[in-house]
Figure: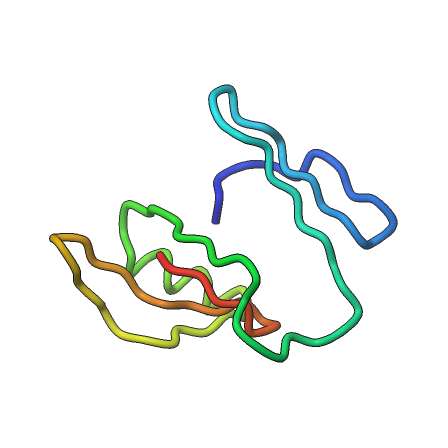
Length: 89
């Protein structure tokens, strides 16, 4: 979804994404315990086509949790990855 390649995987625990020319690097860490409460971090991903992005996420095992939301001229949908971690597109 982020349009970047995986730069490195470390011991099936960390995934480091290729750093964009202008912007921060991003890494994900797997933790053994299941998600129980609200996410500790919530990403809002800007996508060009929310319908197409939602279809990709669902095809990859994610779910759509809400329909279109709107505030201040911005629209988004709340999605979840296969483990239930929520993010918006």
